[in-house]
Image (cartoon, rainbow over all chains, first blue to last red):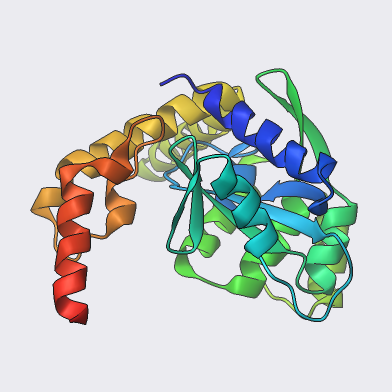
Length: 162
Length: 80
């Protein structure tokens, strides 16, 4: 496969931003974790986004409708862009809001992409607490140099435990 | 070398390997992810409780595959 396809996905999402459908976005979840750790299986790309306006009720319809008009298909909770399931998550709590403000910029096939930093990815994994999230935490703690002060601050602030 | 030292050497070597894999360029890692997806999809027929997630292989038209169509058909029958 031409793995530049993922870059095309990020360009499409960038277009959502240019069209004013979302304010901004960053890569989170497993795909973001892959930037830091050894490879592991994942099936989708998670996008954390900042909604256009701060509203109490958030709808994914404007995003999905715009992408569906471009010929992409909706499948269960994903939208399939270039045969890759993509999931959009709005910033949903204080932790994701803070994570969004502290992203890192990484190059992917020459395209600049915003990625959640590993300390925030760990905190979010601990918050969600699924088995696969615990595995990712393990990977990040063992394989990369974590800012331990920042991580401890986050754990304390959000009442999380390793 | 004691058995404990031998075991420690093996663990250190494994740790070095995992760290070196983590340092690979993301583009290379994604290629490996796709190989993993292919392996999972190829062995799905031997497993129970498979879902569409087991057939996802980036860069292929997995959504139109006969396996996915069959899964969707089964789901419709169960729902009806």
